[in-house]
Length: 193
Image (cartoon, rainbow, N blue to C red):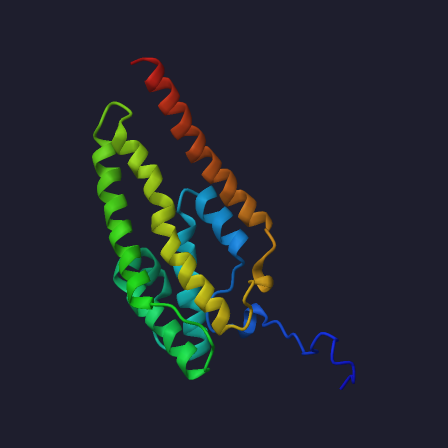
């Protein structure tokens, strides 16, 4: 130990590898870029990876793909399991998992309803704008869950999964097509009104 009382504390800073993680690790930047860049499609993969990591770590028999596809039915369960690990591992992190899970479910259902109404409308309207504005509100509860999962994994900043891979860029290109079609369609329809 250094006798200098003004020196910074020394501690071993171990980062957890993705192979040792109990839940999916992803950095906040990558989470938001992938989520918004893919128009929310990334959330299906996000749920799948959380359930796949949990299954690998716990040995519990489940279908991660189905839990990802039907995420509104399994969000409370996922967040509850993350909270259980926080309590078992005595991680100093406070959040309200039931609230965040409920908010995700409410916004996901609201988004689906608004998208369905918008689908049957021939003109760009307030409904289309509401649909786009709901996306960050739907993703914010997942971001809160991700912060908690990163804490459980001992990788607060998500360094183990902060780099963008070639597959990430492929998915972002697909998302760019969706964004482009939406923007072009809105511009075209608004120009012909």
